[in-house]
Length: 450
Image 1 (cartoon, helix red, strand yellow):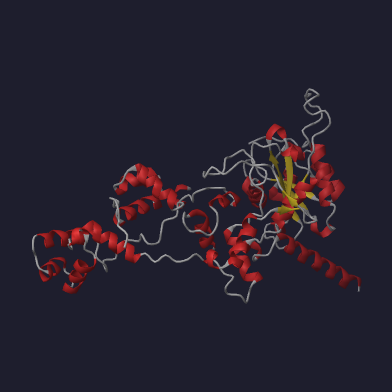
Image 2: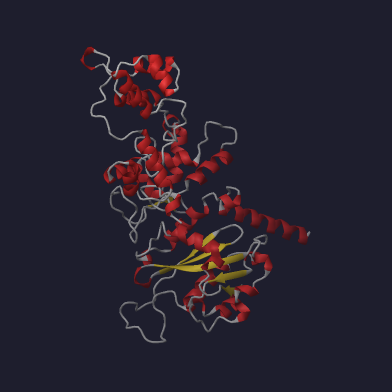
């Protein structure tokens, strides 16, 4: 048996108080001070566990001897009290005290000397039951999880799309306003739920989303590389405790196109063909248009190239919008994308109050799509699109030049997003949900013709 070396002054009770403070939303440094250790130790505990409280630091139940009781045993034993006297004092069984003195005594110097710190170390060593992670023992499951989490984004013909070059991971949270690694980036919950659909009869292909998070966040699990946290939506290197996370005027928006005038069928998502749209803005006024279908969550990305003369011709007041997302450019881009769909799948479009939609009346004439606008300061009224824009920021971070990406790259990112299973769709993908809608439309058309 190896020597314990220099034993830590921190005990189980310290760690319990530390994680209880973390659960209340206290910072790791303040939680360390509250637990009775230094702020540096508190930060190290939080970092080593990935921000996830270990299950073994639950409150003491009283079934087993605590460190305080071991201190009492050491003092009484040093004063020469007998086993039964110590047991009566602690209200424990004499066999418990006898076994404790025999099994957990220190053996240095060839003598059995009972020390509370050494006895607690022996107890913690015996209580540890390291279980081999499922992602380590099941290689097939490991490959499935890693491909869905960190697999490459591919073009329609299967060629990999490398995405922007990124630096080495610095073991910290993903830096904002810089390029991020492009990956399939399924969330752990999407991966765990999709396994049941793809392998309904194979019980070995099962894992909880929490186990995937632990494989990413907790040091020493040995299943997934820590740098793969950059493939998560947030790109956080540490899990953030839940307790820590707690009007413009537009003349072209009239009462007849406000969201209050939108048909009631749009809200319940029962009828497909109702879309939500917005822009994601990048560096130097670059932008990408986003369209999301409310029922299937199918996403289309609009390429908005800059007009000729951008950066060369001085901008003119009330002149043409050279940045690529002026009213006319938006009208043409939306019309080109949405007219590729059947008429039954282009019923309405809900947009924010941006001036890029000043040509909405002409867009309605060109496509037959009725356009509605949200109330001021109410982006939550197009929540589906807001959520999708948040997912797209993994590929197109704020503060980066979005004009670098062409139609091929945008199609590849849209395909990756439409190929992820969604909880709200019963873990189907948006592409599968849209295919079902198209099939039902064909069948309804055939029945009508017949």
